[in-house]
Length: 127
Image 1 (cartoon, rainbow, N blue to C red):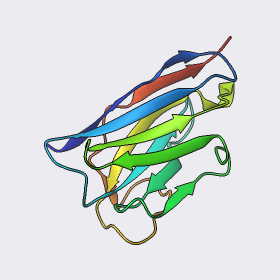
Image 2 (image 1 turned 180 degrees about the vertical axis):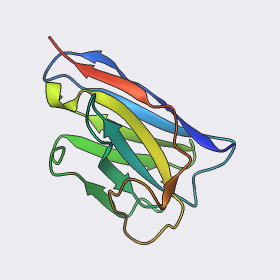
Image 3 (image 1 turned 45 degrees about the vertical axis):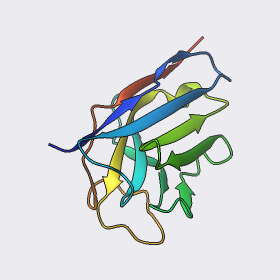
């Protein structure tokens, strides 16, 4: 079954940084746009950021604009999420998924057309 493997999570103090990685298992991600999502305890999963297959368009949730940066390296078959100035509100399990209907733009919508969800990586921001 195709899915992603997320890594790079951990415990970080407020104001700190982490870089998450998202790599596909069993396929290459060249064709797909990629979305990052997160789910905090007791809350619904929400879109954080997305990037088109070419890397030419990115989108961010208002809550992370100016702090998070999404990028992709198709040669490395990996998508990254650089997270700076983290706060307790960023504590969540972070997931990536493929936009299976790639367009010149991407949306932060949980569910279709996003698929191939991974198991997620835990990010905890605490002093």
